[in-house]
Length: 332
Ligand code: CUA
Image (cartoon, rainbow, N blue to C red; front, side, top):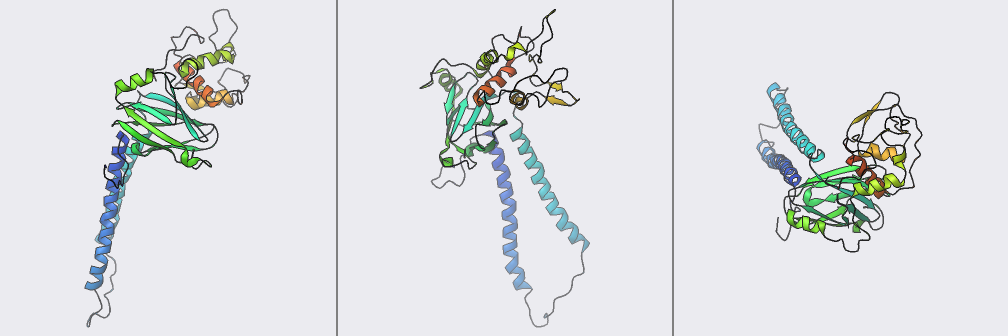
C-alpha cells in the first residue's frame, strides 16, 4: 500500500500474500459480527420496547432448530479458519527442498549473516527475488527474534539451539529487518535491511568484494573442513580402512539427514541441532556401538565456528573419498 498513511507494511513475500488473505478474511468475519451486533442491538431494543399491552415479555422455552443453528454456524466458521490457518502455518514452517541457506547469528546488538559462499554481512541481508531463502539462526547471548514485517515472518533466535525461517521474496526493494524480542539497552536499534535484488544483480553482488573484509572469502563448509582438521575431529571421525583399527567416532560421510541408532535403543535424526549438540555436549546422545569418549568443545568454539562445522558435516556425501577431502563449495 503506497499511501502516506500505510496501515500495512508492503507485502513482499509469498508468505505475506497468504497471511494477508487469511487476515482479511478473519477481519471480514469479525466486522460482520461486530456490525450485526451493533445494528441489531438498537433495532431490537426499539422493536421490542415496553408498550401498553406488552408490559411483560413472553417466556421462550428452548428451540431445537435455533440451538442447532447457532452451534453449527460458528462451528463452520471456526473450522474454515482452522483449516485455512493450518495450511498457512504449514507453508510457513515447511521450507521447500531447494533453498538458498544463510547462517544467522544474533548477538547484542547486531545480526551477523553469512551466505553459502562465505560472503558475510552485518545488519543487512541481500537475497535474490523469487528464490526460497532459508535462515539457520542461533544467538550468542540472549533470545532475539528475526522479524521482517514485509515478509510476514518472525522467528525467535535462541542461544544454544538452531531455529530456521524461510521466505520467498516476490518484489525487489529494501525492507526493514527488526529484532522483535526485548534483548537489552539497544534492542530497538538491533535491526537493518533486507535487500531483494534481481537474480543477476544478486550474483554480481555475491561475487563482489565485501567492504572491510579481512582475508579470503571461504564458504562455511570449507571453513568447517579446516576446523575439522584443526580441532582434530578427523582423527576419530573417519572411515577405517581395511586392516586399520576401528575408528573411535562414527564416520560422518553421508550421515546428515539420516536417522541413527543411539546407545539404549533410541534413535535420532541427524540435523543441525543434533550435530551442534554432539559438538558441545558429545555424551548427551552417543551413537550405538561407540564409547562416550569425545571431549566437549564448549567454550572452545564460537557460534560461527559451530555453524561452519555443521555446514561441513552437511556437505559430506557418501561418495567423498575421505572425511578430510576438501569440502565442495557451498550451494545450499
Ligand atoms: Cu535482539 Cu531485541
